[in-house]
Length: 404
Image 1 (tube, helix red, strand yellow):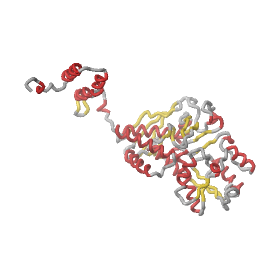
Image 2 (cartoon, rainbow, N blue to C red):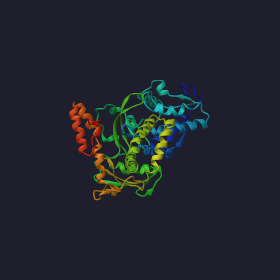
Image 3 (cartoon, rainbow, N blue to C red):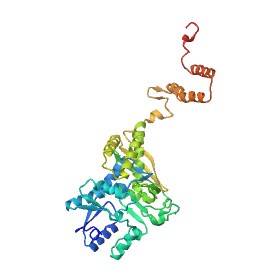
Image 4 (tube, rainbow, N blue to C red):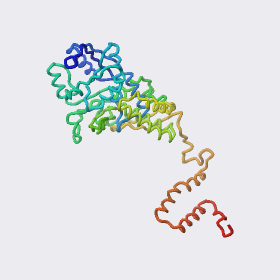
């Protein structure tokens, strides 16, 4: 189409490897051969996996599911742009529709270049049915996932399934849509995994140091057998459309659970509260494909600072479709077993009786407000003051006597 309808003399195909199944590369190569295109395959698995682990440090989820496709698109777009520049291309093109998020994620990267951006599906208002007919007429080996029944996007971190009967919110999907996860409960025995973190990055599984790609693949397999990592969500896209998505993300689920459990051990209450805001903004920008936004630099500075202490181990139990942190340990823990123990009388130099004054003040303003709301009189307020004295408050000032 780019040659026939847009008059480009030469078209170069680019497939970026972010962990797709081998069949997709075979299909891309066969399609390039059928169209007599120069075709490049770029390995970006490590770069993508590293970006996913950055998302773990930011506890990044969008509407309660781990980001995957959103993190992959900027990585893909950057690699395509690199190939386009190497070959002095005048334009870059994508096959995203005008209804989804991917058009925005790709173009957020590309529109910063001097290249023209071409989007044939969006610009010509084409449908999935038209694409399939176009491919069939030219005998192109293009399907679209599950022989065209669903739209499936798979990468190292997540697998998404949408389309067909899944577009109906009232439809209960069958097990046939899942590939990475067994039905929760089909694996009767629970399992426990120990994950080691350094500065917020997961670096080892069961004591074995692993690079980001190997760690992710191994966790996908281990957790998937316990049904861990399924999400069925009504997702709000950037353009305002609401779409039903089904996701599989075993490794992401486990690592996010473990990382947050370790953060909760080493960060203060105030840090945890503020980081939730930072994490939310990080995830929103990542969902929109704006990983290079200036705000992200500021957000990541906070993430980096707080995660300097997020070093230690977390034990996660996999059972019945859930991943649950059941133990955590860190030399940076903001925790004292002796201080909280029921078997010790004091907290360092602080005695239990020192809390009496705090207990008297706690809720005082609320009690006073309730008295006013209930229409309490001056006399009742006076009695309240006398009660405050009885509870340990100061005696009334003698200056209120008749001699004053």
